[in-house]
Amino acid sequence: MPVSFCGTWDMVSNANFEGYMIALGIGLYTRKIALKLKQRKVIEQLGDRYVVKTLSTVKNYTFSFRVNEEFQEFTKGLDDRHCKSAVSWEGNKLVCVQKGEKKNRGWAHWIEDDKLHLELHCEDQVCKQVFKRVI
Ligand code: YOG
Image (cartoon, rainbow, N blue to C red; front, top):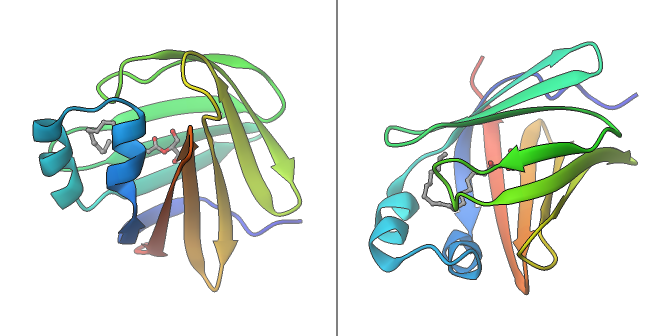
C-alpha cells in the first residue's frame, strides 16, 4: 500500500520547468513569470477519486480523476489544450498519460524521503519538481 499523497505540499525545487514550458509552446513573457512562482500542491483523496490542486499567487489549476478511468482534461490557464488523460498506479508511482496534440505528454507522482516528487514530461523535455509537506 503506497504512502498517502494527501495534504499540502510546497515546492522546493523545479528543474527544467523552462524546457517543459517551451515544449508546451508557452511564450517567453509567461515563462518568465511562471519560473518565479513557488507552486503548492493540495491533494485530496475521496475513495478512488483524487483532486489535485496546483496553486500559485498568479494561477491555480485543479483537476480530478479516478484511477484507471480515462477523463477529458482541459489544461485551463496553462497551455489550454484538451487531452484524453488516464492515471494508473505503476508500483508506488501514480502515472498519467495525457493523449493529445503533444507527443509523449504525461506526469508521474511519487513519495520519496517524505517528499512529494513530480516528473512532468512533454516531447523530449522532462521537468522534475520536489515538494515538502507543510500540513
Ligand atoms: O501538475 O498540473 O497536470 O500535479 C504546469 C504548467 C504557471 C502558468 C504546472 C502556473 C505548465 C504558466 C502545473 C503554475 C506550463 C505556464 C501554477 C503542473 C503552462 C503554463 C498553476 C500540474 C499536475 C499534472 C500534477
